Image (cartoon, rainbow, N blue to C red; front, side, top):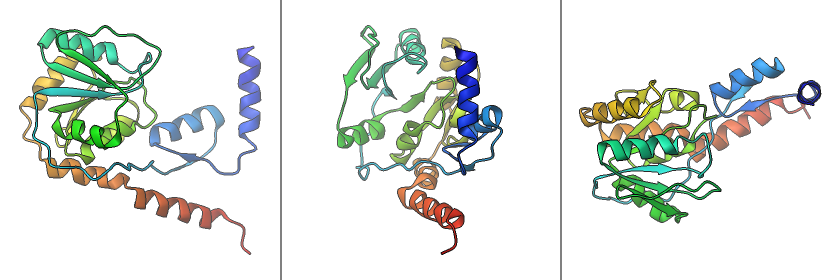
Length: 218
């Protein structure tokens, strides 16, 4: 039935007057599958104000515990290099904890901000993320990001400035990116400034402008 559903989905999509995409990655998909133009409006980051937190010797992942999020890759690198990895999130998949890996489950926004601020770096490891809000959250707390060079991550992380983008999707590839970050003289200020591009105020303004632009003249 997949063939019939795809045709039905395409026909229904043609009834939409205007598309908003949450990244250029999704904009390209809308064109690929629906042959329709769309406007990119990035989603907002809205966390409590970061508190000054002392950097600690651990890396952080924030994700639903499902397949395709690269959690196994992060665990594999933690075991190989022996670094501490904290994972925030819940889901149907069950990953074994170890000496270097700790699962924290769900945490409050206040606790999440402290984890972002205290982490040595944030790991964003999905292969095909639509946008990826967590790397932006991390940067808003002054935390650099190590991300796979794919999906929406390419639009948020500035390679060599607010983090490292790597394209070898393997434990060795991630390990190499971690070593690169250790030699990177990043500035917390740059991470925070980059995250400001995805503010709640900017999002609200762009949505209002989009609606005003496409609303019928009264």
